[in-house]
Length: 200
Ligand SMILES: [Fe+2]
Ligand SMILES: [Fe+2]
Image (cartoon, rainbow, N blue to C red; front, side, top):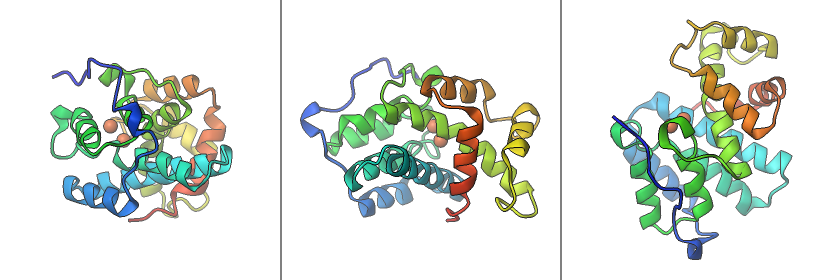
């Protein structure tokens, strides 16, 4: 099975700035994603994207929502149509006339799988947060205090333990951080401090 998208252009530049409303994006998420664990993952990544856009880039509210929306819908087709990931959600959002920036970020969240390189800051951060967020949440689930008291050192230990959250691809995490030009420690700390607030 190949998930290669075999293209590098997404959406219509005329749709620049077009987004779904938050209610529309959540309705799409709820109707396509039946698995609560996956829904939570998408909302966690969305929150991290929002925080990065707001805090690190000082984007305005519209910019923050574009980043959040990319996170919120990046795995929308993974639950029911894994063999069409992420082709199906891209086509859906193209049909709805969504901003190419968001489509491109979704298309490049797994360069090894989809064959699309992350280029923009949005592309790179979605790729960087995706797997690392999942590993940190898996760690929170096994800690008695969850996110409370979690530190960078503990996460790095889990990162080195191949058997822990074995489905999380370590090579992709390092590749993503490298491409984004951000440090492992800082990114882990950023996630720990923010991800625990997203619970449903
Ligand atoms: Fe994905
Ligand atoms: Fe994901």
